Image (cartoon, rainbow over all chains, first blue to last red; front, side, top):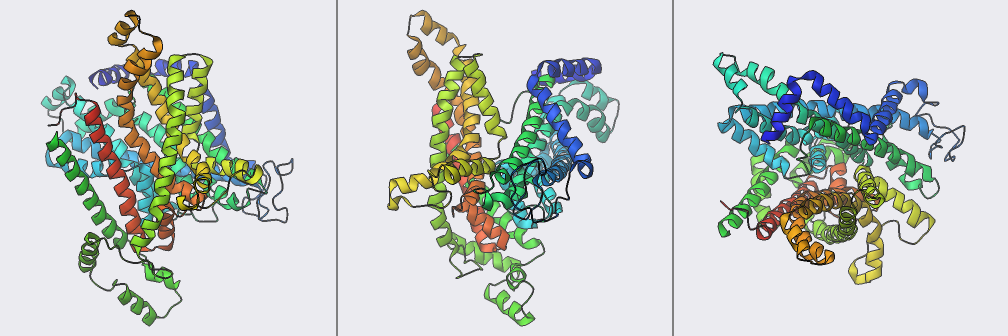
Length: 294
Length: 315
């Protein structure tokens, strides 16, 4: 851990060094380049969905269960809806849920972790007792439990997944704070009479960012997978929003006649997860963060 | 050592206690009650109140909790709000063997793939075999289990018609009947799990192979095979076992999802159906059982680790 924080301090204190290192890692990591390419395509199709999608994703027609063709690139479903358009629109939901949930859980998780690590004592004890309890269960199961409590729907899904990922961020932030607290520059800041808030925000947080960024990147892919799984199980976003998990669930009854309904939505989920994970792996190399989750 | 074991068991009991309290209260603090869902807002006010009384929802929360908890200690989890109001314990005891069979078979399949794959890719480091294994692991980790399940159904059930697409048969209807219904779901669950284990075996074995005692063994003229299986592998398994706890978690979350694809009425399906119906007693019972699985698995892994690696201190 000590080596780790040294490297991070080093990286942060020389901004140019960090960016050149990022460049070095990404320029030789083929998997990461592939990831960036795929992710960019998904982001573009999410933003430009109304322009790219050839049909209204919810418009039913009599062209039911048509195989992929030039008219319907990925075929149509049992209600005659164009699968390609539905998947393009589904990108919006997936990326939105993935990014928003991770942003929320990072904000709250890091706050809890920093408070626990910085103040120690009973604050640490109360926060970490809860975090440890949650840590005993997989994130996805926590999300399912929370949906059981809050119910389904976009907002509830976002709340459930954000809370489910809290513990990862809290633990990382806390351990970073514990390491940094021993550093001389924190003592120096304290001696100068800076407030706790300032020390946490200006001195501790910036130096803890590397592992948090790596965790956030990887978490986005897990959150996307989580939303897809929940939607697939019927616990997700409501039925008239086309999301990948839901499209797959809708198509499930027809896969023996229409394989495309079972193949393409899942492929989209896998590609986005794959691309984000490979970017996360490259960031981990670049920032020299030790893999501590697995 | 005994002190350590007792402390860990007490810890596990505390976690389960916390879970049961949290589950009971959180589910009730949130608006939307099950009676409303049952009557679909169609019943009269009297019908509503009668139902509330029947299921005890008219009593104060603290009374409801004490009653529920007292019954829990006697192994009574209440009855489902739906259908023939089956006892929750009956529903869960029926579901349990299905989930256990599924988890056990997934575990076996995953290990059967992961061990050889990990060992081979470590021994043939940086060859095309190694690359193939790491690519498989990478894909296996990114593939949603429910999608893999659907792909398997498309290929093996819908097209080749080798295996049944849905359902479960108990062992008593024949080994093949049981096995043929479980093999596809088990592969769907086990693949992600095997990817993690294979990666772990590879990196752990590579690390151990650098150790001095391996070089000593080699310079004594010991056969390569003996070095690997007698000296390297047992030590390389230690970190793998710690990961088993996390991987087991994957196995159960996988079962929760995949049971729903194959319409296997295991714990996962009971849990999800309960949530969709807002059937409180069933959800509570299923959450408790699924949680117990994790707590128990973590406990076993911790204890196993202590037995295997004598360097761990128990204070």
